[in-house]
Image (cartoon, rainbow, N blue to C red; front, side, top):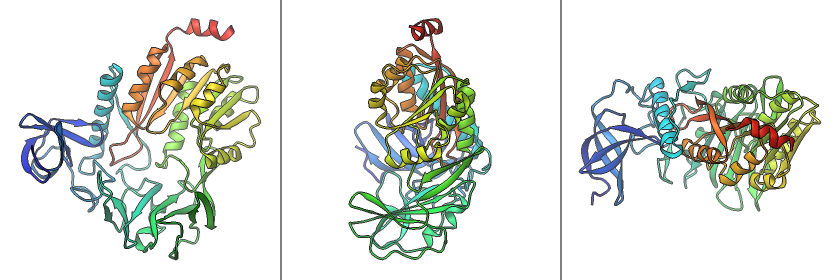
Length: 430
């Protein structure tokens, strides 16, 4: 059995899900990081199982024409694990992601589709986009980022994919004694900044002084979040509407993503005045707001979110829209309660684990004329698309977006419609 630390040469054949490339050595599959398809590399084994090897490319013997020098000195074997593709040109990164998405759709869902990953505006070089960065802190109080598939921390003085507003908070310039994690948050369109601090134990101890006057320090005690000073969250602007988002809450991390995805979902669903729209996993109400404005006061928009803080934010953000209803509940449980609801359009943006069969079946039970499914994981999306097919909904449009440059992550929007629209109309009338 090949042991960790063993080195050998191989030719990389293809790209795989998760930021890996794939080759073979003595008949065994080898998943390789820091390589590109077609390259001849020397690898060092990092993990060994009976079925496969994981390895880092430690020397490039024959380089791909898509290879570039990584802009960050912390990118590479054994260093920061936050980025997967800094050694590939941005356009090549998008081709690699498209190949992975197409492979997952074909392998898991049996869907043959050409995929193009669209570049989001504002970050042509793939740097300076991440508006929320979670830094880990080591036992000495030094902040950094975790190494790949490891709890070990790589100290960094700067993260190049971080938004300038995150960098200006100066998290990496300060010691953080008694702290496990520090999340730095910057609003995309406003000067709002926040810092969320997670202590190592029940007591936070002495907090360092932050240089940014608008910073927020929050601590966890007894399972409750308490504000120490400053703003509880940040304000984001999309179109004409301002959204309050809790400092530790969910918001798309690319500055252009919220606007681009909102426009894409509206184009996908084409909601009409007077219709009923559902927004599942609605977070702070971003898509709920757009759907509510489209269906108008004669229609209704209903959102579901399980997080207390997110529900509070959503209700605050949409307080001027009387035809909006936000429920705090697990989506699967809420859909069981809404068994008699008839929806015209449904939007969903589940976590990485996906929606799952029960939620998919419940969505189909509301008999929508269109479903817009936003996903950040091609494997779970493909699994759920296969389930939609089983309940009579087919994929009619598919878009992919490079919302996470330099990483293997990709955002996808699948549009589904009933296979038999006439039956759907008959059932809706009944």
